[in-house]
Length: 561
Image (cartoon, rainbow, N blue to C red; front, top):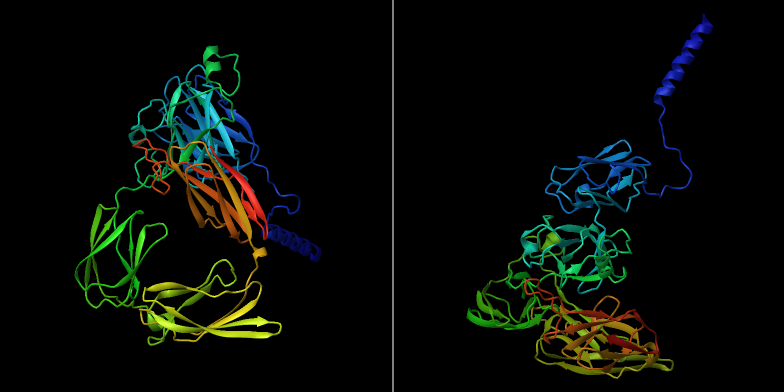
């Protein structure tokens, strides 16, 4: 009896352990990095006389869908998008009943399919079929770049229209469509022979229509003829085949741009800091002219932002009443602005961890401390009042320190920056000292004491660059820019013929040369305009970064063809 009871308990225990066990994926072995592979298609890929309502694509493993509403492209586009669903190891594409007769369709799955376990995507898969008796075999291939940076642009629609009518992108869905890849390339396969209008669109609202002002576009100047990528002995018209065949590396090049917004608007002015008013505009401008209309007339220091889309006013005195001004930009856009006294934020003071009566300092930055080819400058956080001040300059030598006190005078010019005229010597340690409360900003702030130490560089710490520019088109001027590795402009020159420009005393680092073909000679880069059939002004980049080293001279030739 005891033996039977023990056997029963053992069976029950084993049953409970089995019920609690977990099924886990075996560990160990190399990670799966292989995308899914297609093993069967029904109907077969490249089928003709296609009449099916669905397509079944079977893979070698279980798969999942990745955002099919954005990654599935049907060309020519359908009135209704197809539906996709997973059935076992297969993806079923259900087609709407809108297929046209005698038409070749291509369904592109751009990373739509991923494997179930590791999420490895199938990069590009194309399924083509024809409702007629043959598959169109012509193609158009190209590359899409940003018009200003010349960087490749990915995931942007490219359209083909079989009619050359300028208004088509505004109202008509394209005949064919595809998307640019990560390297900017795009390709239309299995299209009908003929010439096509080519248009690219960063379609923000996904309606395949150019109808938003902030949608980026690109277009070809003339219709582009489709071609076959290689000799095709089965082509019925050998003349068409020979005439339309081009080299595959001869890509159609498109430049993507945003049209300039011609509806200039002054946005609401900003007054987050006492005595500082900023006036942002919707787009950039060339000229700005204020005119006093009434109320309190202001004395201010004016700065226009580097990209010329904002104006900043630093006031000499606070606004105690309202001030009425008229602003005119580019001699045609006129706005009336009513400025009000500064209102302190409810979150200011103690709520920000600062006592209400705590002193706010005038910030003074000491720049170009080590540079022997640029003057040391004092840069102020707010324009300062005129004054005379003493600066203690200590030159530290092996034999002892050499200290002098030099007196400087700030003129009454509403300064934000002041250069220090002093003959700093090469490769010597210095310290400079300015006592506190020497400078007073027009906003009532004053400086803390300034004590800075630095060691000057030598001429051997800088390099020189010489660029020999060669121009083939002398009908306009060119704008040459020297850029640092952050893209900031260090030097700009206007050139109109073959010339040499020297960029001297450059700090070691990587530099770029950008040149704008200034077609209208207005001194800036202009974007395109599709309605006026204007391409953006052409931009050239020197074909490689220029690495500057100390005490080296580099000479390069730049042909602007």
